[in-house]
Length: 156
Image (cartoon, rainbow, N blue to C red):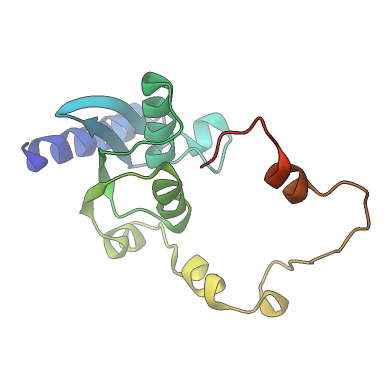
């Protein structure tokens, strides 16, 4: 498997996305057994969706094509080092490997800086810039108890 060829395809998606003005400079593909099974480009502004990053779009596409919510034995090729959100999505999808071209430092130099999110992850919830409040509710049913005891569920 030629990693550079697949990585170049992801970069070309990002370049085309910039040239057409349809989104940011990010592209990603997902490969399984040497075949591209998912593609994505940044559509944050076009879809008015802050989660529409290239990696997330590629994960969604690959999952639909495989008809599975996990991408075991798949490789992600992306034009840039994944942000914290995409990093989490990659782990949730169970992707085997990730290859990226540009670094988070390259992204920062172009105006995309995720450093504040990495910093916020380390901060206690009481000191975060966006307040997070844990509210305990007294209810008869608890979603986690229902899940644990459910006979019809798909574990992940």
